[in-house]
Length: 420
Ligand code: HOZ
Image (cartoon, rainbow, N blue to C red; front, side):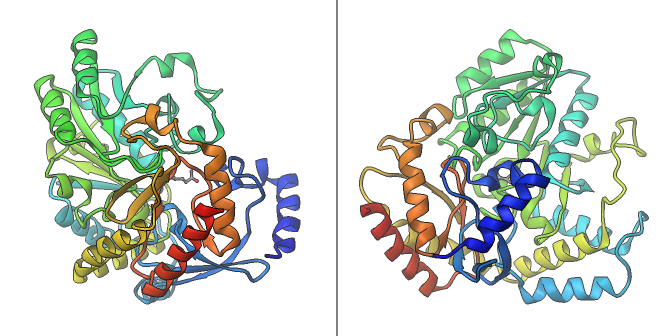
């Protein structure tokens, strides 16, 4: 595969942008080689600057549940462009968007739109602190909630990929407000609540983790988090930036039947444009300014282009519930290609192949993966035109645009890559 134009672009990018990329996980640091520069996408395929074609399992890291350039999203964007790109004032569309979110996710009685998942989690923990009058937040090792200072403690995603245990630049005092515990261990949560009695504002969790690779909750775990937080007067925050409208229309909370107090959303709800949201119980969200004393703001929040794309996505998904059944069936076919000795974790259309034989239930077991082997597998797949997330500690995403032929080609490439 000739990628000379991408190589040239990457050399130039590195002179101008730190590491040549605008987000670290894109840089291919843990898998070797340099990233292809993407020129365009269509359905389930992307094309790089040299004209190479790939079947895309990154989907912009989750948002593209309908694939690239879906007609419903494009039509909404074209329409939005005819009226303006930003007003910094209320619009009818954002009320519709709020209604669509609240209807799909019943635990969300009120919602505030922001511009990214990071902003959503940052605001959610502020609201939890403001509402409870407590400072500490429990998070789980290997979970990633965007680059919010205090949530970068023992975080997954790019930090796991690059082997950055705890980033520089975050004051120790911020880290001291975070209690990091192993995922899938309810007893550790119980113990932490005993140790920090009356001081824990919230537990924030990816109900299905995507950021240490895909790791599903063990039976009873989410129920235990719900029960423990309620008993101690703390809030339960589901970070559904990745899982919202992905693992079910109503997210992981619908799939597992748990009602959190607050939820953060992003990715799919933007239809490929930058949107985040946080919302939840009315009594909690009523404390957000200007309705209440907890401040949070944003010049481009509720941006008309982003809202148009997001609303088109949510409306399309509501009108086509069969997408979820189809994704489940196709993901099953795809994942059947996994040979012995590789651990497959899958929930709906998100999945990860871990290069370890044992079960992967938390960050410690995820880290047992042979990342060098993953890197060789990744490169072998890329050479065969299959574009996976360039890290063992990320999930792959299937979209509704992936065809039977895409799956057949992917399975064939995977067989060759595994044996190579
Ligand atoms: N938040 C994404 C999933 N780990 C990665 C996107 C990024 O960090 O660039």
